[in-house]
Image 1 (cartoon, one colour):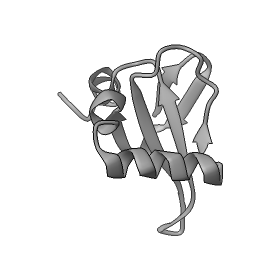
Image 2 (tube, rainbow, N blue to C red):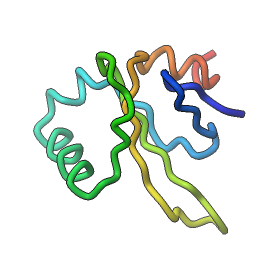
Image 3 (cartoon, rainbow, N blue to C red):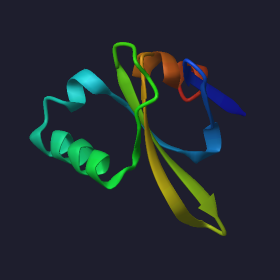
Image 4 (tube, rainbow, N blue to C red):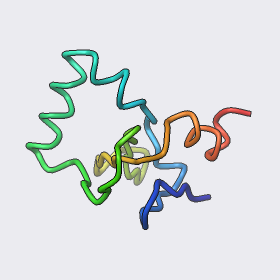
Length: 89
């Protein structure tokens, strides 16, 4: 199954590592440094132009090992994305 993150971005649900709330995550210094490092290394997809409410860490898995990590920003709240992905019933 797939999960729509907003605009024209769709990802495979089985590749999701984490769905995190932007506001609460940016309150942490370590999390802020993590996102800054990821942006410097080119792991972040900045296709979204709307107000960013969450970010999703995605890993492409082949043969039980993660090959590629990518972070997507989304204008949709983390709670809504979790519900859409059926992680919360």
